[in-house]
Length: 516
View (cartoon, rainbow, N blue to C red):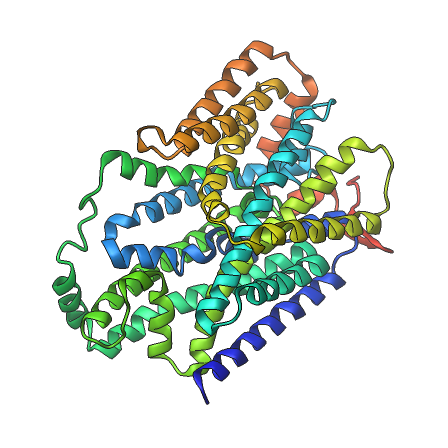
């Protein structure tokens, strides 16, 4: 069997599996809450792995191994910052966001939570937050489509536009049909694929080269300073890399998994699974780079300097049978697609729940809400595809910018909303706008070479605090909800059902029955 045929078979199996999960999700989707949040019925394993897969994208399998391959572990500070940030996010944000979003009128999106939490009757907060999500994520999704098209172009020699349309079509199908459940379960499968592939490549490569001593010999021959964590790094560079971890608190496509957990107490188990997955994956990416250097040195696998980001692909093709190598390629595609699908769904929820509902007073039926969500997914996909069609560098560069924008605009506000009862609507709006504007200006001029998320996050936090102190008025309803959310932040499923009732299937609508 030829390499191309084997890889094509693996891709067909992968695409078919993702589509089947989408159809399964369709059978479980009865109302907008199901479509956008899975009825708050996500178990810890699915929540943890889907959050990781939605987060990492192709960077984990291509960008990180490529950077380490070229420069050594000094390029790993971003991975350190991200791992620390993810752990703190699961520890600090997840349990309380899960309880508070349900206490605050069963909020199913980040903007609706902020509006309900702060009793914003003007709906200005939800609209501004929804618009930020719509604008940034449209470009974010398009960058994923660009990555998908480029992947097929480099791996199979396929026309870029055909590859882009293929990736976009499959993601659109299971997201459009299955909603949050399909996205979460496909992300879980994709997360497992990514982990297995990242662990398998360095292990198989080490065995093929003759053991650890041979790998070490090859690496030392090429770059004796490979393991120096500060080799050539500047203080500002290290701080900027670590600052990537601040972005987690404000990424809507990640923290929505916290909101969908079955209970706040399960955040602890999900954190352990998620961070374990992340550490193993990052170590696997580093191991791939290390073994790749040695394999290239000894002539086992030829990896040109300008093909450094393909080290994972090339190692997989040289180490495994064609079908297995095909699934290695599918793991990269899984990383790309998992992020696109999550971002599509969050963008759709912002359009329906936070922008559309803010300008209409008409009540819509459960299935009408679902259909409106599906129309939004389709519309955003088509708009993103238009940008991706031209494959401009500005779209790809916007990924880092968007991470900073979301982190600075939403991160400080989410933290304050969960842990400071005196946050006001005016303070949240001031912080959100400050974070977005500072990131935009700082990112454009690259002051001091410092990553824009750090000044954006700090100044947004300061603006929210100062304005809230100036506009704060005691509100008994907010105080009561705050105390209840805190009390329920360690609740298990039994306590949640006692407070909010059990999920009940009734005709076409799945929801919560009010507790007696």
